[in-house]
Length: 284
Image 1 (tube, one colour):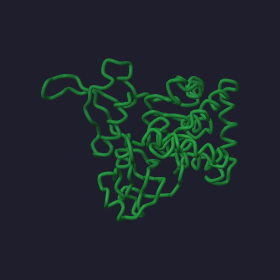
Image 2 (cartoon, rainbow, N blue to C red; image 1 turned 45 degrees about the vertical axis):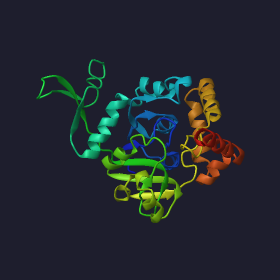
Image 3 (tube, rainbow, N blue to C red; image 1 turned 90 degrees about the vertical axis):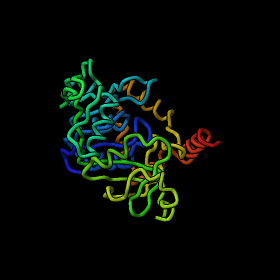
Image 4 (cartoon, one colour; image 1 turned 90 degrees about the horizontal axis):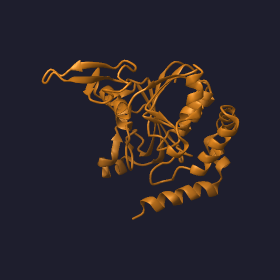
């Protein structure tokens, strides 16, 4: 990662967010970044509060519906400290898909008739077959993609259980791809289940084994998001505003020397509880 890079994150909202990589990015004190993610969650708030990002490209930023739109996003955008480039959720997916395909844009109907038509670089084109107006959704080519997956082999072939979100397209569109994985498996295991391989190893530049690498966000089937932790975090923001995020970063990002030390702050019982909740949702 370099200052000024265009950064894309995999997962969606609080699902498979590459939190271990985001934490390391915060610790490296990068700046001037553009952050792109379909639905952005607490990681976006962390990066804004740390002064790491100057522009956010997203469809929505929140922990989820019960908490509403991010108050931290509102603070930084309304104060002029961070620029917000808002696209529809579909448009962001199309942007990553165009980048993965290597084409400059893809035609679509999304955002037509809304106030978002003039956002960013989007233009309209005429359908050569019918004459209809279409949105020309521009490709997005991130400098760096940060992803978290369920398992990967030593060659970087990555498998994802459950919904893959936009990770496959993000990986193919980005120049550099950094991945953390819950589990390292053999190449033979990858070959036994080729249908699960969402990201091929030839697009992955670095792979790190990081169990609980999304926590306190979820990794489908392995552990659930810690909504009690989210509630504590948002209550602190309600009480103290943006300063609460800085306090959170001091405790969870800058304080622990390693990822295991970070997980120790939550405690074994809490991690075990989230594992059990995930199994309750997925066990047949």
